[in-house]
Image: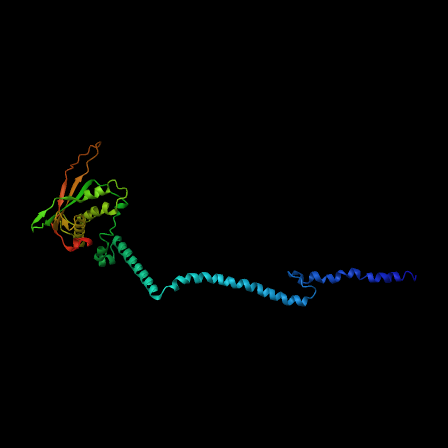
Length: 289
């Protein structure tokens, strides 16, 4: 019995051996192992280092983020702030003038094609003076009417010769000049195609059979025709100075095709306007004296 009693006594110190993992139990539950750098069993040293790293790491990226967001705003404001005050005023005035001019143009064009209303009745003359003939609108563009006549506009001039006498030039076919400029031209100008033709239509539509103007449009159309003719003839013609001009139209119906039984008189009909005295307002800017 004496021999057997010390055996359990020897085993007793082995009893704590299974308790060896007990001191290791707190290690997995300790939050310190989650830190990237193990600081050992001393938790007191790891606690102050945790907050320091936690505060410094988010603070560093936050500063460049704020500067990155504020950088574009500063770059966008630089062109405006870089200009001097007079330059900014000039830009502002230019924008305001362009906006007012665009508003006036669009308003006048709209009122010109709109049905009669209070504004057009009160300011119709001013609107027509602005729109015609440069900004006139022709709705035939959407419903064209094929031409059934060939209309040629011709002009001649009465000149003062160098010896003090007067002479009359021959008729010059202005429409033929435009036709020659358009022929074989893949990109003819709008002036060559429409200036003279539309000017003559403007005149015919604003005058009666006795060549009497009808309202402001009639007087304006006469001035427009005189300017076109003087632009083509020039101040000097056939060695003399142009003092008066005369315009006429030569209208010839288009002959029917060979396969048609229609009979049309193709005789040319002339419409001759009275003589007009040339003034400084009828001369192109480059040729005024």
